[in-house]
Image (cartoon, rainbow, N blue to C red):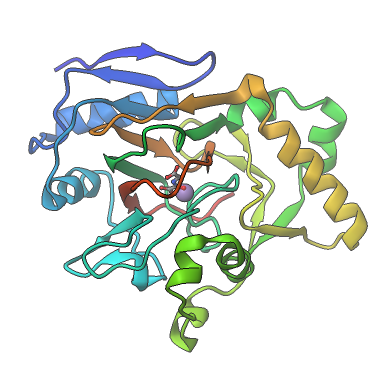
Length: 286
Ligand code: OGA
Ligand code: MN
């Protein structure tokens, strides 16, 4: 088959027409989807209706599932799915402000996931959009002297500090509080990744630091590190690199975590918002 894809933002984002994610797609079709993902960095599908099994089956065709450390957010019968649901559901803890900071998913692991497949099940009447940015475009637009300065630098990525910060602001967490167990903490030691990452499939370079999980530049004093990171965070999320997605129920977005970031936006949490995400394992950044 040949996918019908329309580019809907200036430098990235492909909108895929007439494609049913629920089908048991053959290898040739999956290869086309992967190629399209590499070309557009993220793919938007509308009008999907998926069982948990269909969602997981599609996702698995791109690689083994990354299972999130915070098992409290996972569907008990389908740990491949993390529920971002402000009411909680089916035994999961609620998340009201999940991902309301710029990040790519799970960059705090030694091998961060290559992609995520997010399915919208319930959305509030207003707001709750998700912002995405293009990290190839952000890297390309850096001044040469900044590119030289960061070429060989690494940054520390950490989840625990984010968990602590998020629970201080998250209504869902405040209502239904829990701690990470020693076993969970042991799964999330700090890791270091290069600040300039080479995408293993496209060979292009991306700016690989994010507000959510990066805490410092390795080997730099704190003040200088904070100033550089702030500069890079602000640069990478400039309007010209950003696409805003206004969700409809049944939308699915498949994004590449190696060359995009995303950020949840505000909405009135007296309305339900419920999204399901599968996450696909990836490789160590270089
Ligand atoms: C995610 C995420 C943001 C949102 O699913 O990884 O950060 O707007 N979601 O739900
Ligand atoms: Mn996320």
